[in-house]
Image (cartoon, rainbow, N blue to C red):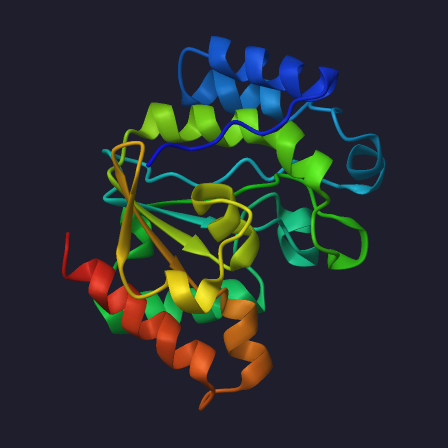
Length: 207
């Protein structure tokens, strides 16, 4: 299965060209931090949350969420709020080390009020994520939440049907699972938390 390129407008096309020209992670991060392709997001954000990568060595796997929240926007780092704390806990329970992962989002700026990113925003930001995945060249991706799952697997994806197994996408094993925010919303005994832990444990078994 191959990723379907998003329908690009002029801003998305410019991002894609700029991102593709970045020779390495540092150069990509530098240029992404000044992105104004989405005027509403650029006007309300504090930081462009480019993503975290291990300080030394290639990541063992990549985690891709939806978009930054309030704490992420304040700090400039992904998954450092409540969802991030739960993600760290469940990764550890599954036998995975966040320090060995790249942690990214499909959209790099916080949508106002934590709303779901709009389709044009996802399309405009896609160039950054595509180049990140190319530069990292990691064969295992964990897509957290429906927005991320749809980015990799297509707009008709249903999370309950897609989770629990790897999908081969552009040479990568993509595991779609619930976002930690869903696990928080349904509580410690809810189905999303149990499914998220089960999927992370399955991922750990492949590494």
